[in-house]
Structure formats: C-alpha cells, structure tokens
Image (cartoon, rainbow, N blue to C red):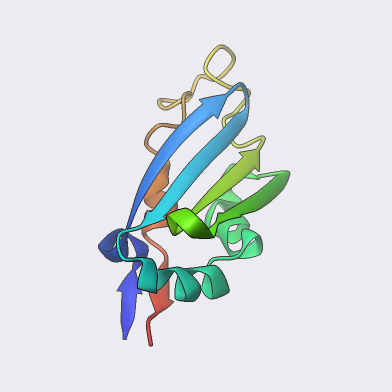
Amino acid sequence: MKVRLQDIANARTGDKGNRLNIALVCRDPRHYPAVAAQVTADRVAQAFVARHPSKVVRYDLPKLAAFNFVLDDVLEGGVNSSLGLDGHGKALSFLLADLEIELP
C-alpha cells in the first residue's frame, strides 16, 4: 500500500544559518523499517533538488522511531541573507512529508 509520509509520521524543521534540519518521527514504530529502507539521504536530496542542497545527511534514531535529516545550503543564505519568504525554513517539512513510500 502506498502512503505519504504525512499520513504515518510527523515532521518538524529547524535551521541554523544556511542549514536546514528536519526531524521525521513515525507515529507507529512498526513503520520505522519501511521508512528507513525507502527514505534515504539521496531521496531527500532529490525532493529538495530545486533548493540545490550541497549535502544531505540522515541520522537514524531507531529507539525513537525517528530520523534527523540535515541539508546544507538550502535556505538561500539563511534568514539574515535570504530574500525568500521562508528564510527560516520552517515550512519546508512539507517537501519531505509529501514523499510516498510503500508499506508492507
């Protein structure tokens, strides 16, 4: 069954300068293995391709059924430098939450 991450997980963003941090927490720990297998750093980089990330790192937090993604250079220089509407990156979790995965 195909589902969007927003249907099975919560996402929260933060930022520091030009670096975006996205926490993704599975609502049900049973979904963690499927998310771990399908939501790779490369797939997240592809979801953010329009923002030109220079680096994406995924940190796994299995005891919390969660992940932390750190994306470099996606905030157009950060809140103090960007003319973008969301220089903080707070609304960017939707790009990750919109990804589809296959649940067993």
